[in-house]
Length: 285
Image (cartoon, rainbow, N blue to C red):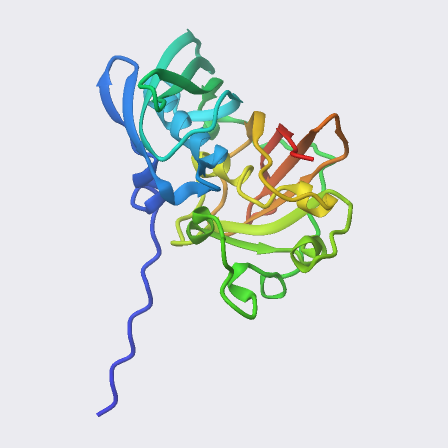
């Protein structure tokens, strides 16, 4: 008698996924939250900036009367490590359509001193109340079909030294932005990919905060390697993304003085521009 076929793995859902569990906070008092930053979202032992933004974004959603991030600006002061952290939030202003708050994440250093790792100022609203009138000159990124793009699992051998975050993401890179992995960077400062969470969870506004900072840095296609730490990152969330994979396009036009900018666009399966961002990052030349 033939063996029964194994059932396909169930897709995670919003609210019940690794991303949700690893960004969940424990209230400790008015505007104070605790969290254990997961090592699963690290790059070179530092916690990914997009994951951190989602953590603070969820804290502000709990603090403010509105639940959807509209614009979030973060300054990364020191590198965050996996382990215990405290998030403190403050309400700056509440209005009928927008509320503004600030949040900071703190950890203790090796000498037992509390250190502020990241500070955020953000405005929140209700994305479902926005009018659907769209007038845009933005163009969807020209990315080949997903089966013609490549991720870490598509190499001839398992990738060694991949960051832990890679196991939690579905990233399929456009071959035209993959030259850095083959020793032939294009020099164009572009990165494009299909993006999702590895467990199949669809994106929500907090996953968009992760998506803008989850691709390999454009510095790789400029012929530079190593860590590219974020100095400042601002994200604009435009609407709730439709179910399905996202398309992320990131470009750098100027590297000078050891710093570069990365402009990101995130498009959903309904061909809508759902998020935009700009970050300033430092390059170790």
